Length: 332
Image 1 (tube, rainbow, N blue to C red):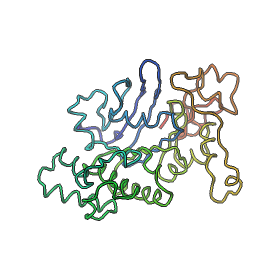
Image 2: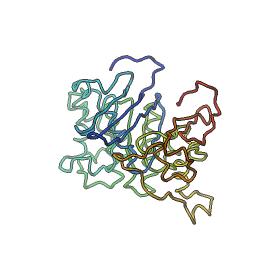
Image 3: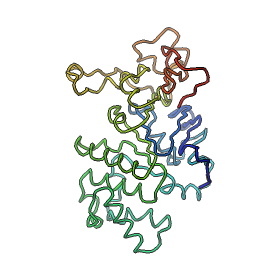
Image 4: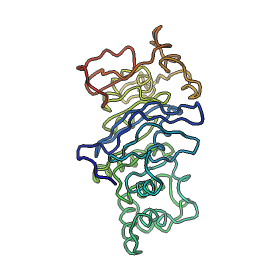
């Protein structure tokens, strides 16, 4: 991979757009940065563009998708890479932990062979070296080496997710993208997987981009949070601030939808948000959230809002946000 300045972010998205077909706008003008060792969460309802964003990072989208903008991975634009270069970057530069490990693992291959596959592709040619690294990876994620001979159906859901994490770590990537890694797991196993991810990215100084609909999980796991709605980022800032003091009405609705420990009223009557995200082929004019917004103004159906600084490090795309930062402060 090309040498980038030491201060350059591991990942930088610049005005990223993803369109399916002619007019299905799944991702619209996303700008995000992720520093080395940092953990960034991306939240939103189903249909808001989170998974499309994740798959776009390594050009894993179908041929019908059209991508514009820039995806800079260690300073190199993924969108301009030739296939040979892209193949070298996948696993070694960045890797993905997909949602639903049973659908991602090959049912007829032993898990040890599946963990070894990226090692064989990316240059550990001797069988002894591959076996040693496979054993090391399984032990890192809390699985005994003896489980290498198991098939995916012989493992629990949490164990299969650990295998996916081992595969993601195999080639020492700089970035791991975790797309809803705990959705299918019960709360106890979910907590174990989240602790494991946090421990591994901290130990190896890996950057983590984690996608979820659950703001509470992301706020507990990540340093920063970005909230997506209708394909664009509508709020971004420090994770505790976005979760406990959101500025965009959509982020407030997401936060209020989860009962809070120690708050009996939220447990008895958690608030939700009526309606669904808009069809990306039929986006409303102006602010796309205005049909569902409880505080929309007369101008909202005609005027979209850019990200504004509510504080120097916390930005939201809402007409109600009063700038509280000096002129020239840009979104983090």
